[in-house]
Amino acid sequence: MASRHFSYLLIFAMFLWGAGWPALKVLTYELPLEVVSFWRFFLMIFAFLPILYLFKQPLTLKKEALVYIIPSAILNVLFMVFAFIGVQKGFAGSGGVIITTLSPVLTFILVSLVFKKHPPRMQILGLIIGFIGGMVMLKVTNLHFNGAEFYFLLCAVDWAVLTLIAQQSHKVIHPIHYSFFIAIVASVIFFFIALPYDIMAVTKQGATFWSSLLYLAIFGQTIATTIYFIASGKLGSSHASSYMFLVPLFALVTSFVLLGEKVELHIVIGGVITISGVYLINRSQRS
Image 1 (tube, rainbow, N blue to C red):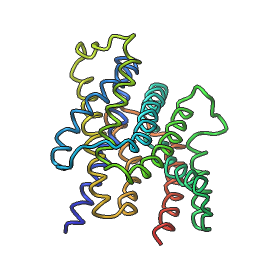
Image 2: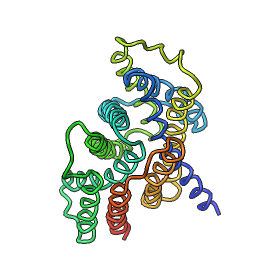
Image 3: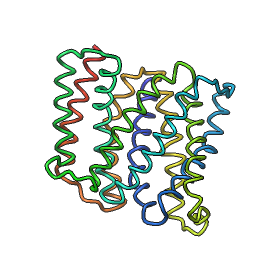
């Protein structure tokens, strides 16, 4: 029964992540990237405070943890920049599908190269299938450096590197503390980037803007990530990671319902192909 409850919580977390893409799209209509990004990370700091209290673990920062926190914060900053530009140029639902399906494939490639692991045949097959799906989603024959798909590809590469660093960071820092300190460092970085702009322009925005910003900072990031970490500890990381396949679906559905975005056929076809590849990779790892 307990495992069923965590399964429901994971589905809820995947919905929160997926619905974050149309929320980000709404924010691109109003204010510059620099201002929006600063306030997103700044609000995350306060959203983490009650979670830190509930965990009741002493908040400590070891020197060796900075080796993981600072690069991770920089990668989070870059991810926000690429994602913002991507949804500004294209569809939020497409970004949700491309990034969340390509990232596991790229992460697997990165782990194999860094740790010099020779993957078994099932994983190689999954990798090939995932690569084909990625090419379909990215419309590789029409890919150009100023299109939305290119920025979504940069997001996927960024997140793959970030995932590898995050996995290694667990040796020296608790995942919740790791996320909290990343929010602090990213806020400081974006504060100086946003200084030339009207950083207090958010006070002039309406309910739609603030609901999207608060959703991203509190629900789409802090709460969803915390649920995922807790469920991973209870169910196992392999079981929990399989729920990531729901994120593209929720991203497409919420973008269609909230923004009226059309569902692009090549995104659906490529997404299904890539998910099949990722499933084979995960199944081989579990066995």
